[in-house]
Length: 142
Ligand SMILES: [Zn+2]
Image 1 (spheres, rainbow, N blue to C red):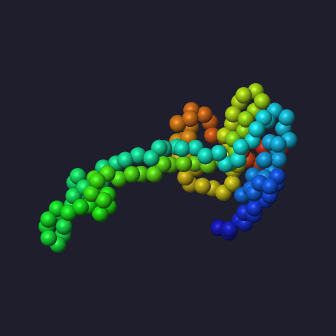
Image 2: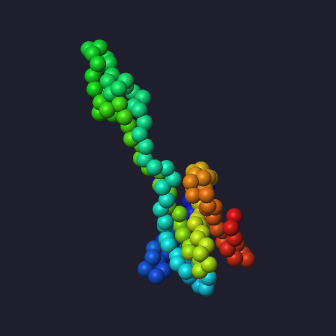
Image 3: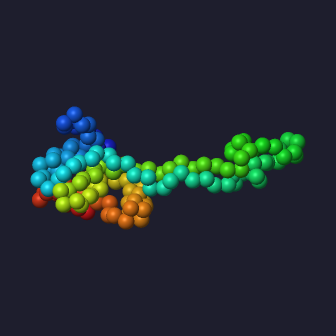
C-alpha cells in the first residue's frame, strides 16, 4: 500500500494535521449555529489504576542464584504496579448555540484501534463519538 502524504495546513495560526481537518474547521467556522470550536479535546477513557505485581509475591521473589527471597525489581518490592491512564484526543469539540455539544473525528487514515476507542468513549461519556467524512455533497457523519 502506498504512503499517502499528510501535509500540515495552517489556518488562523492553527496547525492542522491534514487538509481535510482544516477544511472541516473552516466549514464549522462558517456555520452560524456554532458557538465555539475546540481543537484536539482530550478525554480520559480510563483512569490510571493499580494492579498487584504478577512477578512476585508481596514484593518478594526467590533469587535464582541464592534461593533466598529478595525484593522484586519490577515493582520495587511494593507488590503493586501502576498502569497509566488511557487518554484520547479527538479532532474537534463543537458547542452549538442551542446547547448541543458534539465530539467529532475527521475520518482520516484507517486506525485499527479506533473502534475500540470509540466504544470506550461512548461507554464512559454516554455520548456518540461522531466521525465525519468529506463527500461530493458535503460533510457526512459515517
Ligand atoms: Zn513485583
